[in-house]
Image (tube, rainbow, N blue to C red; front, side, top):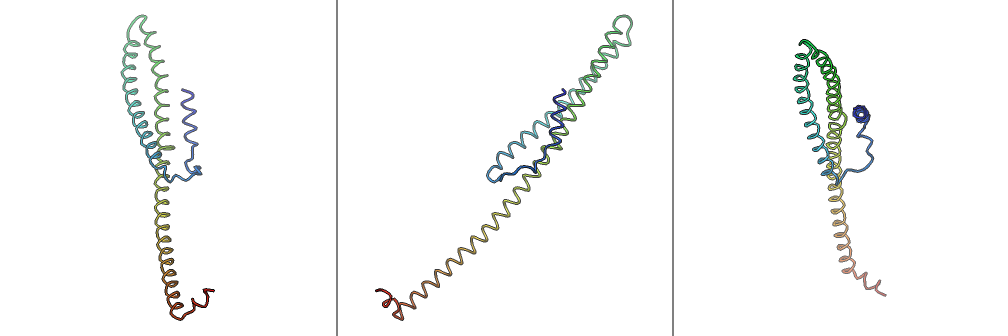
Length: 162
């Protein structure tokens, strides 16, 4: 479980803003990752609740053995110690679940939303610039045709056909 705590610490140091690539076109991958991570976090929460309920029942058994007479007191004490050790595992699992949510899933969701907003803004700006450039090309093409017709009418093309 030491490695679990270590991984929790690594997750808390994880900064999704350090990604230096363009996520354009990779939204489905990130959305799938976030979806699967959310499901895992949900299952971890459910597991923590089940472990807590199990340890509560286990503690009742340990208390029953501890409060009895004879050699079962020693067994009850051992069961209580074991239960306490497992409570610390439960706490670490709960901590991991929360760190997983707070330091990975939520920041990634916020970042992907930001990426989508930026991509939509860039798409809109590109569409406006494209439309403007297209109209400029049409205008210049029209002006060129008008000048050609005028030049043809004035007979300037015949002098340049040499």
